[in-house]
Figure 1 (tube, one colour):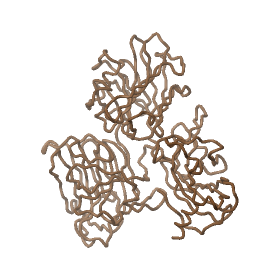
Figure 2 (tube, helix red, strand yellow):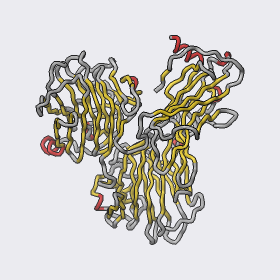
Figure 3 (spheres, one colour):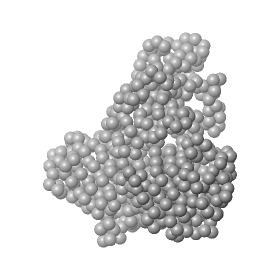
Figure 4 (cartoon, helix red, strand yellow):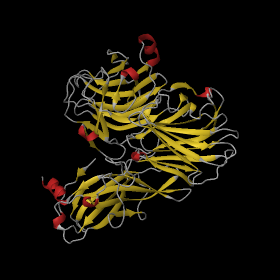
Length: 598
């Protein structure tokens, strides 16, 4: 979100650009790196003019294109703008994507304006194969809540809308069921909980509005089977306010697996019972998966893959302990990510393998395969690079970290096995998706699986003219604060440089003293604050350079609690996926002054 804060125009003197930082910490939103159900700050909306009566593709746009985003802390509000109004109660719904799961809970506060008469609806969509596709033929569904009369009608009205694979739309309407006096113009709280095939809708923490069993309607009316997917919320009606939105996956890791005869060539996976392929034990809430001999195909090391999915994300860390059995033949573990759905290995999917080529060798191998947009495979293989003494029978710990299109695989908390820039793969586009793990090695053990989606990044929230000393062009940044498991936040800062030095056609920056400036702070601030805010001011800009664009990109600094290595989490790149560079925010003195002075 880019905003210009109004201020008086400042005076600039001198010939040299000097970078000065001022930092502060304030209390607000938390939960940046947690899987818990916590309030979300959502920056994108997925929009279509089509109605929920048929399949359609959504266009990704900034949430601010359809909603006025306001507030702070754990109560961000999204107020629907008076644009693209619906021609019926199911159309023009910009969906705020919350996450992906089969079983989930979603909660939010909402208010329907008194000035608007007639039908007013808010829609929860779920079971979507991707954030930008609503496809009932593959299981997409929608639940609506609102009123069908003006504010004088105090009866509660809720419509649940679920589609089958045809063009027809089937809905159930409830008026005042259960009996509930309802004033839509005051703030209400609604909670959705979907577990198995049962959706429960609760209003104001007391009134159960409806419990709905998808299993029964599938039997009666041959609905497409609900298999889970992306969840979103939105409304087509102006001035409706959504706030304090939270989402939590209720899926248990390994409750089901998705089986592929061949991980690479199979275009479809089939949902199976986990215990058919893994002997699963649990101790203190931690699961251990031991592969049994079911459905093993020894003709290829990519065959017989039952994949347990852990969640959906663009950037993430996935780590687990594992142990390979002693024996002959190749032995491999697989991690797959970037999948559009749990049931398909599609364009954009990646499979990364770790293992050994035989039981007598200490040779460690790893490689990945990326499914290109044209359907072909990009295969990269590394054998013992870097050299690493690896014994199959020993327990090991592996971490996969995906940040801005760069995959880093680390073994035993110290040996970096490989770093791969997926953006360098031609004819390939990584956009995130479902993440899972699996093995076809009988006796292989995978345990203590930890999946951490990196959903919130530091961001530049605006630029203004700073009139107090030191005067200059000021970039304002902020970030939600929560710890990444295994890391400690130790500081934050910005990278700054003039656009004229941003010359790479790929968008990558060579961050060096001659080109750009890191302006950061690692001490003297309250790092326990729930939200961190800081600013960086460029001073002494010559008047001849007032039209130049200056770029700023924020970052957080984390220290690995085991190795003490530093990990820089940069603001999300909206243009070119590179871990060290992007045009996150660009502003000039004259552009900011013009915005201030109107």
